[in-house]
Every structure is written in C-alpha cells, then in structure tokens.
Length: 171
Length: 450
Image (cartoon, chains in turn cyan, orange):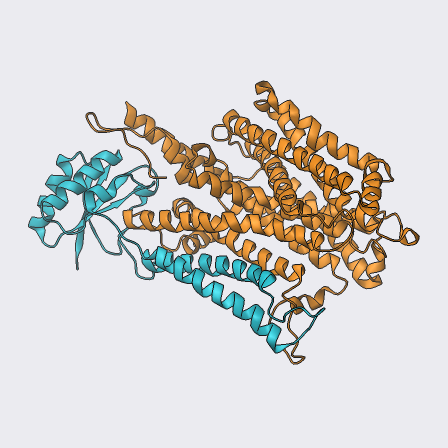
C-alpha cells in the first residue's frame, strides 16, 4: 500500500517552498492541501490545465441549438398563425435560445468541475483535517522507508511544524 | 508573533461560523415560530380560501386583471437581483469587501426567487395546471407559445433559479468541508454529503476557481435578462403607460436598487443577531450605501425620463395616464414612492449616515416599501385606466391579497432563518483570504488568488 509523507506548515510560503524542494529532489507530484487557495502554486508545480472551459463552451453551444430547436420545432408541430406573421419568428425565439444557452452553459460547467476535480469522492483519499482550518499541508507519495526519510528531511528543512506518514484512506 | 496571530484569526472565523450553526438561542426559536405562524395564517390559509371559493376572493377584476400578486412577483424577483448579480460582479472585479457578505446575499436571491415563484402559483386561478407552461409531449399535442413573454419568463426564471442555486452551492463546498469536521450527528452526515469529499488540494482549488468564475460570467447577463423579460410582460402589451421601450432598463435598475437595499437589511440583522460584528463592518455599509446612492440617482433619472416621454408623446391616452398617475386616485402612493426611493436616499451623500447602522436599516426598509409601491403602481395605475373611459375602474386589493403580501414576507423570513442554521452564512475560506497571512522573512508578499 502506497504511503505518503505529510508535512504541516504554519504559512503558505514555507509549504510552497517545501513543494518546490520535493519536486526538485525527484518526488513525483507533491500535493498542497490548504484552507484557502494559494497563489503561485502553478509557478512551483507547473501550469495546470482544466477542461472546464471546454465544457462551458460546448454546453453553451448545445444549449443554443436545443433552445432554438425547442422553440422552432414546437411552433412547427403545433401551427398557430397570428396576423400573418411567420411561424418561426426569430426575435422571440432568440430569447429562448439565449436562456437555454446560459442554462446548459451552467450545467455543463458544473459537470466539467465535477469531472475535472474528481468529485464526488467515492474512494477515500488522503485527508488532513488541520488543513481545513489553519494549517498548510504538503503531501507526497513515497514508497519505502528510505524515500520517506528523505521527504521528511526536506519537509523539516523547509520549516514543517510536524511530519508524519499517512496512508490512503487514513485521516 | 505573526503566525500566532494568524492561527487565532483563522480559528476564530471557523469557530464563529460553526457556533452560528450549532448554538441556537431561544430568540431564534421564538422568531422562527412566529414566522411559521404568520406564514400559515397569512399566506396558506387565505390561499386555500381563495382556491376553495375561487379567484374572486382576490380583488382583481376587469379591467385590472393583474393585481398585487403580480406586483409581489415583480417585487420578489427584483429583490433577488442584487444577491447573485452583485456577488458575481464583485467576484469578477476582485473586490475584497464582497467576501464577508456574499453568501447571505446569494441566499437572499434564492429565497426571493422561491417566494416569487409561489406568488405566480397564487396568482393562477388553477395552479394545478402549472405544468402546462412546461414544454412536454402530451396527448393534446399542444405546445406552449414561445412567442409570448410569459413563456420567456418561465424559461428565464427557471434558468435563474437553477443558476443561483448552483452558484451558492459551488461557493459553499469548501465551507461544508470545513464545518463537516466540527459537527456531529445529522449535520455531519449532511455536510459530508454536500462537501462531496472536498479536501482543499491545489487541484481542487484551481478547478473551483475556474468553474466559479465561469458561472459568475454566465450569471451576470442572465440576471440582466431576467428582469428585462419580466418588464416585457408589461411593455409588450399596448396598454398606455406600459408600452414603453424604457421598461427593461427601468426594471433592471429598480431590481438592483431594491435588492441592494434588501442586502443592507439582511446584513444588519446578521450582524446584530448572529454576532458577526467582526466580519460585517462599517466598510460594508459604507460601500453598499454608495451603491444605493448611485442606484437611487439612476432610478430617479429613469423616472423623470418616463414622465417626460409620456408628456412629450403628445398622445391623449399617454397624457391622460400620466395625469392620473401624478394627481389621480393613486397619487399619494406615487408621491410616497418618490419620497422613499428618490428623495430620502439622498441622505446617503453623508459619510456619517452611510456608516450608521440603524439609519441605514430604516432607509433600506423604506426603499423597499417604496419599491413595492412602484410595482403596485405599474399595474394599478395603468390597467385601471385604459383606452375606453367607460371601462375605467379603480382597483383596491382585497383582504386576501393584503394578507398574502404579509405572508410572503413571512415565507422569506422562514426560509432565511432555516438557511442560517444549515448553510455557513459567512464564507469561511474567503474571509480567511482577507485576513493577514504571515510570510516568511525574505519572501515576497503573499497574496490570495481570488
């Protein structure tokens, strides 16, 4: 079973510094866990890309198409001529299209968020309760005693308040 | 030492919010009990009475076929406009002062929308046929008429309700996780479920930041469209006084105006009775006061413009309508509205006024009374005086209608009281962001991403 080294820090700068050193020492994917979003993570751990924008974009397009199809399609299915005006009237149908674009844009954004952030969590993951309150945690995968000791040394050197070993599913 | 100061502050907000959820005084239960009692007696009882004896129990009759129910509907939709909209705009412009108050403001949006939806149900003579406004394949092969502004309304409000619920929920996920660890029993289970397994990793924050910003960007134009569409319910008719192009901006400005006043009222109550004095400060009231001042001037400008276009049109019906509004049967209400929404808010020019809590509360309530009057006048002054003088008839709301107005306020209060005990009503993680974060010596100043 894979175990993780966990270092708890009092401030975000030290945590970032620890993550930088761990990465430099060849540890794969150090992870920061914090009570607030930390600025500058991408400078240390490399840029992050998310697929959410694609979800929003295509969700919006799907919504626009389905909105117009709904309004125009139902108008054709149930003909209701008024005052010689066209059956498929553009200005009012654009409003329906607009609303549906936003509705599906929003729903797709949520879906994109859930998928890209891997929510909801079904399997238990590494969790640090202190990092939900006022501590900044750095965790890193390390197999074997020797790797753990090395990670521990780096974490302590960067100013970790406590270092402990933690395995997946344990909190 | 700085780090100790930070620890104290971070745990402070944590403790304060958890306390606001789990520690409940007798005052809360008494208020909740009163609100539920008023809700049952003033809202549901008259509504059932109306359902049993027919829509005649309400004072609406030809020619004023729309009455206070729809005035209330516009009022509640309007009140919903500041919460999510303001929160989105302030999020995108990266305003720090938003953070302590946005959660409650968004909740206000959500609950006003729910009350607004209920007002439509009350207005319908046969609410059990509400599903006819939803497009679904049916035996009669009938479809809703998408050329009608009423159908625009259905689509816009459904989208807005969905969007606002999602927006408030997404912003609360980290907070649900934060309070999850501090609670027990049913609350613990509820927050575990709602937090989706949030841990606060850098990836999760990154994804949340993006998704939240996208939602904010989508919701701003949506909110503007919602009240524009509500205004078209009126403006697309050919009734004098309603058939005006200014109506969409007029409604949107009015909505944001009454919504901002609503936020001031809610902030006052939260600050005073939920002990959030440290987080909701004079700064918030000052900024909201400035916003109210700008909105009141804008609102006054549009009102003057409305009068001017009516007068300048030169058509007898418009002119007659205008005269009726200013000097007719409803004139006292009109001048009350001008006093509360146009004149009294000029007090906000004073710094001292904006930073005094009780005067701000009084003014915010006065503005909303004025705004309710505005919505009532939009319907009452126009529909009671259309083209044919023989069909002119004054509209006065019946007791059932007046009671339901009071009941709708109780419904809002009940929902809000339940909310403050279930949702963290101040955003924990965003307030933490605004706190002083310690930095190591020799390191660049640390700043929060959002």
